[in-house]
Image 1 (cartoon, rainbow, N blue to C red):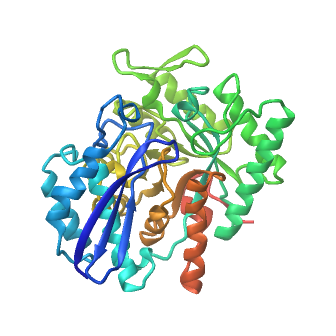
Image 2 (image 1 turned 90 degrees about the horizontal axis):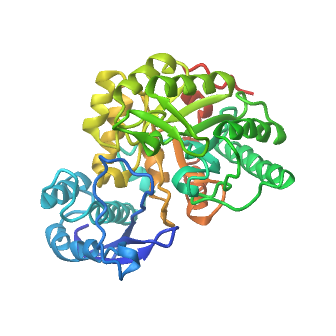
Length: 434
């Protein structure tokens, strides 16, 4: 199963921006592809996404340098390697780049080959990708975390909070979780239409917000749950991606809700997050404090870390070293996992395993600029991550991920497991079942 050829080229993501696809072809003729997503709200510690910077080509966002990296140095370095040796291939890619953040060859170039090799190995062995990733023993179908309202950088900053999502904590099967969210998504559309607030959708498929305040949307989310025929907190719970780094001023160490004209100290913003969690059926908060505000993270972890899932995204950037620091210092209790933040399949799985070893929850996630690739659906199942976040319940680049889990469940048959809201066991908002 030796790699005979690698070919990369520029394709486009869900926002119409350039990205990289790499195809790995084996000596047998078997082929695997890797399509790389791109984020809009990015952490400062993310591996570097190499773009050309020429304003005459796609506003500087073309990726021909990254493509050249794949077709030149990378192709030569991994030629003849066994595609089943994922760790060995990824080590060669990391060493070849030689920088801490993969800035020489580009994390997008490196990840495209890493993913393509994994896909080629699965196809060559006649197995599901999730059966070949990690240790091959993963069978847990993830609980979806699905966006209803998109804000922040995903909707031209019409709200300060980036994502308002729902999790079907009361679902007894993966298909039921999708059915519940589909009902809520439809209910949200109908309520917005009735209230003359339906104006479009954001980058990830959620509805484009037209609310006056961030908290007004929390009231709306409760209305959505009830309009769909469910009980807030028992059947459907709220998840928020605050993306606090986007409105944190490091010089003044303050947070600012620009849409509301309100400014908060770190202590005050923490108090606001705690207040929201007490008033609304919120089970999960992502990046409730800035990646630069470690004291704020410690404060909120002490206040509600035993009651709410506190996810570090910008804080950790899928970086094993940063996750270890977080577990050592007792900030957060969950980690968002995005392969393109770190740049290889092996490092991504390592980040998940470190998170799980600490007793924390990993949440495998897509990016706002996505492709038709469903790699992360397999990653979530392969590692028993337990949660998957890919955006809303619309747009094909989102639905392909939800649908792929259905296909995996059908292929696995009786081996497939689903624990739903049981993933939150130990938190105040864990689902009691229905």
